[in-house]
Image 1: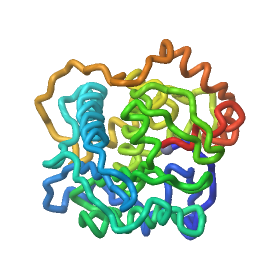
Image 2: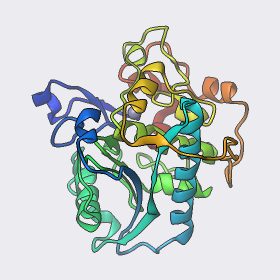
Image 3: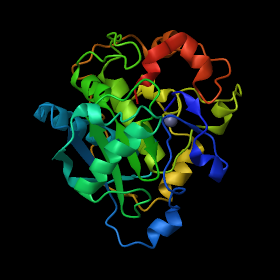
Image 4: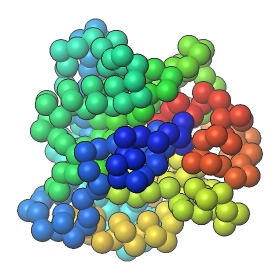
Length: 300
Ligand SMILES: [Zn+2]
C-alpha cells in the first residue's frame, strides 16, 4: 500500500507503482477475461512457514478470521448482496524449504517479492493473473527496508509483521529494528483488505494519487486500512467489484463482529487517522507521509 514509491521495471508498461503494488509479468486480467474462465472463483489464504520458523496455528487461524471479516465487510460495503468466496480450507499452511533469511535475497527491491512468491506458487499452484483464483500469501519472514510487498494481478504478499499485527504481537520495524507502536488488530485486517483489493485489480483512488483535495482519505484503497472497519469503497471500486466474477451473492450475517481482537483500540477512527497522517498532497502516497509516520508504512 502506501509505501516507498518507485518506478519499477514496469517502465516497459509505462507505469509507476507504489511498493505495495509491485510488479507482475503482465497487467491484471480483466473481469471479462475472468468471466470466460471456468471458475469456481475463490480467494485463497496461504501461510508460508520458512524452515527456521515455528508453525503457528494461531497465525493460520488469524488469517482465516481476517478473511471472514473482510468477506462480510466487502458484502456490507457493496450493499448489493455480493462478496467473494473463500477457498476450502480458507488457509493453506505450507512449510518451505528455505530459511527466513533467504527471501530478502541480495536486497534488491523485488527480491523478497519474487523469492517468497516463487515458493508460494510452487507449493500451491498459484500465479499472477490467475483467472479463477486470488492468492493471498503471508510469509513469516522479514523483507529488508526498501523491499516490496503488497498486491497486484491476483496475488498479494504480506510479511511477518502482518502476522504479528493480526495476532496482537509487537511489530518490528524492518528499517530500524525497533518495536513499533501498537496500531490495533483492525489495522492489519484492513491491510489485508487493501491488498486483496489490489489483487482484484483495484488501484489507489486517482484523486489521492494526484494529491487533490477531493481524495477520499478513508477509502480502503488509500488510508482507510488504518481506520478499518471505518473505511469505504469508492464508487469506482464498487462498480469494478460488482463486475467481477469473484463477487457473487452470498448469504452472510450482516453484523460485522469486532476486528479488534487482541489489539488495543488506539482511539476514535478520525483521531487515529489525524494523528497518523497530516496529508496535504501525498505523492504516490508515501513521500509526504514518510515524514509523519516513518517506518510505520513498512507494514502492508
Ligand atoms: Zn496500495
